[in-house]
Length: 334
Ligand code: KG4
Ligand code: ZN
Image 1 (cartoon, rainbow, N blue to C red):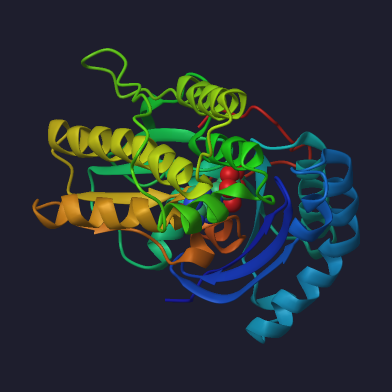
Image 2: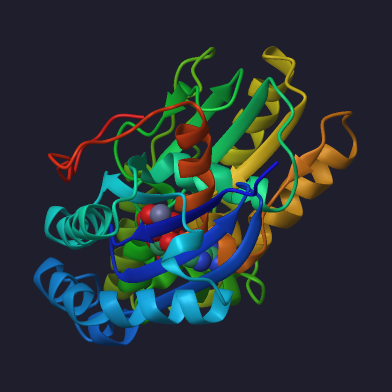
């Protein structure tokens, strides 16, 4: 049978990314132009700046993706693009580029949910086994998703306030660390002591939901109180204690859900999946269980277009198509 090549486009936040994936599993090219340097001095992503960079970068990144793959338009079976959620102005650049290309090159168009992409980043590493539990931890999302088959997503738990990555970025800002804060806290936490007892939001007994805003407030209060009393608070200890609280809740709920739903595989996705402490703790817990755990390599944890092409392949094979009226949807549901 003929191989399927899907071109993926991702512009939902601050990376302009284009990739070509073979048969939903094999990366033939994966180009990411990061804008981190441009947003750093503002301490976070500035939507207007993000959109402008996407416009400047998209055609260059597209060309590079074809070059890296050694492929031509004739080889491409369909175009998959992130339609949401994300920053609307940023999403629009990718969606409109995809629509223009689909029209000009006469290719089918498939809209992809950003989180489905993060989940399918794992399939670039290993085949899925259902039922499967996915822990999605990114700058915008914290979710536990149950999948019984390809392309079907049941959200069994989600954050009621801040996302895990958002909490990392906000705490990093309080510690005057540069954006993005997650990797900075991760690095500091490895050197710190668990000297501060920050709260853990377990919520109701049977709930798989998360909440990180209370933890964030506890960190703010701790820093302010220490300042007022003239105490010195070691940033590495704050980082370590904060991270311990986040990891404790994420890992405990993931293990509980994996057992309750008797899943055959647990996968982790999203930028926070790059966290060394989280990876180590999950690996330690699942090593004692019969459930295989899959965490993608760092470059597939953070935003990229290979994951969008991988998720798009499944949708494409299921016959799902988007029209040229496809629109960016900043609050698209999974
Ligand atoms: O998935 P992603 O690249 O973009 C979104 O879809 O949100 O995730 C970005 C988030 C940021 O909040 C960033 O601080 C966090 O992932 N992050 C980390 C680490 N690397 C990235 N958080 C904790 N530890 C890390 N090593
Ligand atoms: Zn993401």
